[in-house]
Length: 306
Image (cartoon, rainbow, N blue to C red; front, side, top):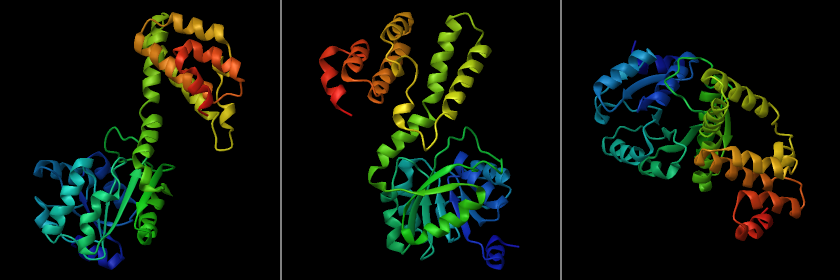
């Protein structure tokens, strides 16, 4: 039975995927498992890559170029950001888009402006950014469970996107795309940099004589415990603990003096400066701490910039 016929019988949207890499494969696998849609054509940069994607997904039809795409109800572009706009132009030129269908991408840094070309073909557009880093394609059926995804695009198709991804356990949040770069920076801070903090603390623990396994395990345990203390009801001013939280200037200075690695010391200083902003200490205590972290001629601006 063809995918198109199967789609018609079950009243499922036919979904093409362009760029079935880590995200594309994972989404296609989940769409198939939860029966949220029917995977149609899959197009990657090379025929071999497309074959490997279909083998992983266990679904989909191989095509070698955009001209061979069967027009679908939804086209998901899961390529790198700088390719999306060009792909949209090619989709229009090849008449590979069904009128009133949805074209969406999954980039965090690119907004829906890169999809505007398909509007000429009377298509709807959307971005669904999955706020989770996948190190490899996942065949875990719970890969999106309790994962937050942000949506922006045509309001009229929000329900369609939600109906596809909610059964997978994803939490869909609408977002204003005007500050998309700032939004992406926020995502990077919490998804890409905690690992760097673990690496930094691991190096310091190893310098104290710990084995690598012990150092990583301890670093991870501490950060996991810390994150458990954070919830939506928490007052931001209650989150800062440690020497900054108690305005322990002597300990801050001793910590900095003990760190030999210049870049780790810079991390400690940068995070310390930010932490001072989120304390209830009066200006005199904040100035004492900032005096350790930064040059004195910038103190006035930081103290008043709350």
